[in-house]
Image (cartoon, rainbow, N blue to C red; front, side, top):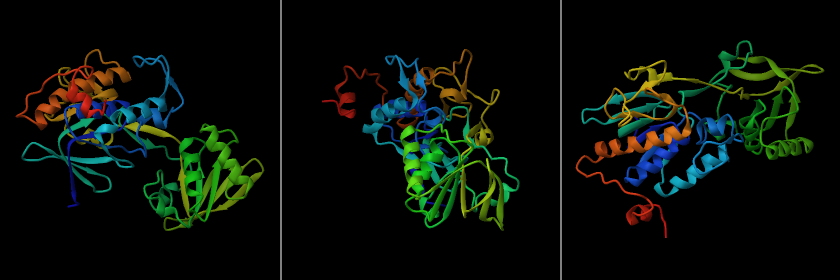
Length: 341
C-alpha cells in the first residue's frame, strides 16, 4: 500500500463551499486536506465562469467568481489547509476504529476521521472532442489535464481550445516544450485578455504557433501521437505533435461517489439538516451535492451547511472535548487563530 497521509477531515472538492468549510473547521482546530479533480481551487467558479459576477453573497453587492475564490483562500490561509489537485477520489473504506481510508485514481492513500463531500454536482469530467480514434491515444499522448509538467518537456505539444485552461497551458508549456501549437476554431477567445495578448505576442516572435481550425484526425501508432490534421479555413494542414491537450470543457458526474454505499436521491446525497450527515456516520455532504427538503442550490446555503457540519465533525474528531460555541467578533482565542491583532 502507498504511504498513508493522515488528516482530521478530508474534503472531497475545493469549490467555495469546501473552502468555507476549511474556515469553520479551522476555528475548531481541525486540520483539513482537500482533493479535487481540477488543477486549482474554486470548482465551477474558477473553471467555468471566473469572470462572472455573483450578486447574492451576503455583504458583497457584486463579486466576481474568481474574486470570491481568492477571498476565501485568503480567509483560510491561517489554517494552512493541504490540497491535492488533479485527482479523483476513487475508493473509500471504513476502518475498524471508525475512521476512513480514501484512495485516489493515482493510488494515493489518505486516512481521516471525517469525510466531507463538497463536490458540487459531482466530479468534473473532461469532454472528449469528436475526433475519430482519439481513445487509442488517451493516457499515452493525449491528456485532459497536466499532472506533471515535466512530462511535456522537450515535446511537440498541440493544445486545443479557447478558454483559460487552454491559454494558461499554452503559456506555461511554451518555455519547456520543443514546440507549442494552439488550435482554436476562431481568433476570439473566452480567456483572460492578458493571456490572449501574451499568446499573440509569442506568436509574433515565432515562439509558438496559432492555427484557426479544428482537429479532424490524429495520426500515430500504439498510442504514440505523431501528427494531427487540422481543418482550417484554407483546407487541411498537418501539425507535428507528440502530446495533445484538448480543453473542450467539462461535464459533471457523480463518479465513484455513487459506489460508496450512500443513499442517493436523483444523483444527490440526502442529509439530515441538523448535522448534514449522510446515511453513513462520519460522512457529511454540503453544497450542491447534498439534498434535503427545501434545498436551494446557492453558495450561501452551502456556507450555512458547512457551519452546522463543523459542530458534528468536531464531536467525532475530538469526542472528549466540549464543543463551545463562540463568536469571532468577541472570542480572543478565535481571533488569535485568525491572526487578528
